[in-house]
Image (cartoon, rainbow, N blue to C red; front, side):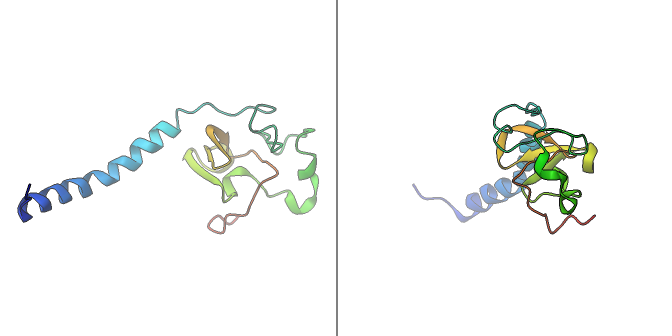
Length: 117
């Protein structure tokens, strides 16, 4: 079967036009994921806490002064789905079947160079 140049260009332009909407569909699906709670798997293994400012046995390692500014929202593994900073919620690459609080923390925290504060 031979495809004409015109039909190929039409198909290509239609495909390219739908790309921006695919990202929005994915983000909508992410915002429907269940919110991870303290002590739940898989966060338990990473010592995840939903509120990093609240004293917790899980977050003992965060007590060091140099870690006081570590939150999920400024971690490189975090992608925001809604809200802002500590009040926001998002996805963590390490916990793909759940959302996490932006004000949360886990022991796998890595500074996101794009987020300064």
